[in-house]
Length: 119
Image (tube, rainbow, N blue to C red; front, side, top):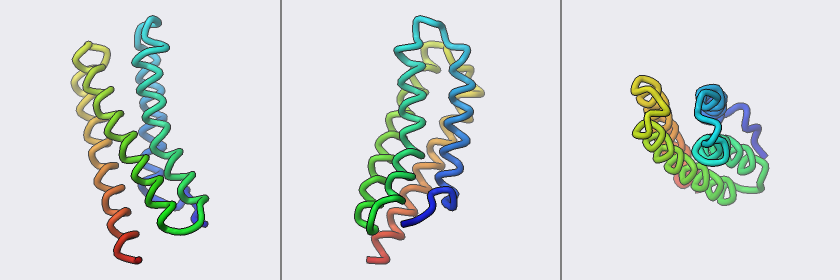
């Protein structure tokens, strides 16, 4: 069992989730159960799945949860794009958040490759 707090990718995901919760506070109220909720849920799902994977036995289970986190990151990428095109996110914020998601996906890919190489 690993401590998820020791993983740089988890820390980066956690910080991004906090930032997205703050950024979506300004979204229209009619989006609370729509795009606001989707962005928050997909963002929070990434570090949550990393944490859950760390609590499982063995690298195979951990890798499975990292794959789920990767899927949530891809979902978040789309929701951010949608928020930008609906003009709910400023271009500068969109680029910053999008770049962070891409970096998180790279980090997840690297961690998955390391797990596979260690088998």
